[in-house]
Length: 188
Ligand SMILES: CC(C)(COP(=O)(O)OP(=O)(O)OC[C@H]1O[C@@H](n2cnc3c(N)ncnc32)[C@H](O)[C@@H]1OP(=O)(O)O)[C@@H](O)C(=O)NCCC(=O)NCCS
Image (cartoon, rainbow, N blue to C red; front, side, top):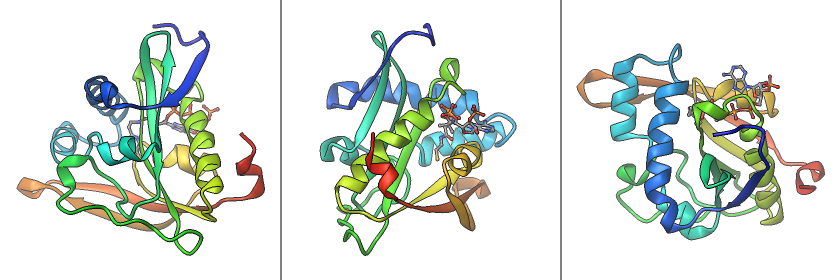
């Protein structure tokens, strides 16, 4: 893969799901070191991180392509769920009420070969513009510890530190973060 090639952002579709599953696995394993233990990473991949197919169905999940490879993926949501793949869902995800409630930023995963090349920022700008166009005034998310520096750089602030309880007593720390959407976010 070559990080210098032209990057194309497009909406994800169902045919991307196998590649997205591989991306999530390699992204989390490669970019969580130093933030989470191997035990936390294995448990989180099994029970928390995964494709949320509702985002694909809603047309709010994007991939960044480099040639035929998916270099990164991420999205936003007009629904209540804050984090997690299909494996965390038991009921239909209710719609939010813009502008009274904040849109969600969801499931950003960058392939380690493309880390720190601005793809997280590119996906965020795409999502922020779409959420603004949909009538939302604020954004919220639950950040992983490796994700927190990205969102801090994008203007989010931590409003709550939380821990997700996983089986076998494993705990996954994260942070709830929020940010207002401004007129500048509409220009992308
Ligand atoms: C978090 C993640 C999506 C960031 O993606 P990325 O494409 O590397 O981020 P960008 O290159 O757009 O970074 C933009 C800015 O965010 C900050 N940033 C991003 N990652 C950082 C890190 N690991 N340490 C410190 N700052 C970081 C920097 O200010 C960076 O700007 P700079 O590179 O000019 O200094 C990526 O590390 C990832 O996929 N992690 C594993 C999966 C995960 O935990 N996702 C988050 C779910 S909430």
